[in-house]
Length: 231
Image (cartoon, rainbow, N blue to C red; front, side, top):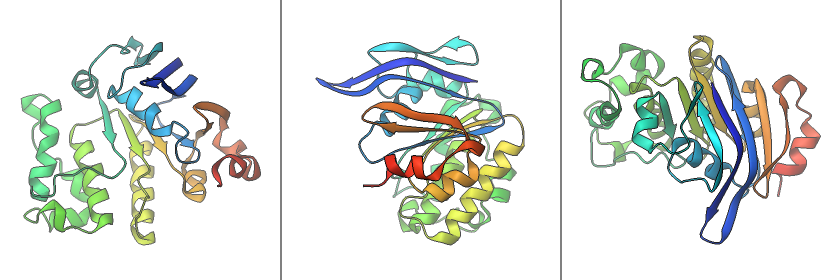
């Protein structure tokens, strides 16, 4: 569903991505791993359209989206859950969820019941301000907000960062449910090796803006991956 071909990305004179190629298939979780500062978030920003690439191409469902702005990619079914969650702290949980309406047709502008099946805690917190939620609850809200847009590609940037173990397990279960439905690709950036290992159908390891190891999740060798993700 997603095909990234040989992309280069710069921040001013600094090159963040060097000839990166990656695919993310439907019905599968593709995990990207690596140390801080190696280009993982830059790759996701390129996919979501938040930062232009210097060269290379990005395809989504056989369409070249390299030049499309973020709102057009969102309308085509790409949803990003950013690192740090970036919810609106002064809006209620319900209002945060409703911000996802901007990317979808008017007839779909309601919160699907499945959101509360996946994240039951949010049903009881609809009237609470987003900033009053715990870090784990905010992460669940950020994922739920993305799901309101009915994505076919869900892009997750380190969803376990700063989250308590019980909610990490809940998020893992949600990812399994979503990918098991057969109509979604999931691109996951993660530094927590065990979490990535349990979920990955395919994986890629980045170092210094390049992909240095890639393959099927079942073929992942822990020692090889740890060599590139440990400090």
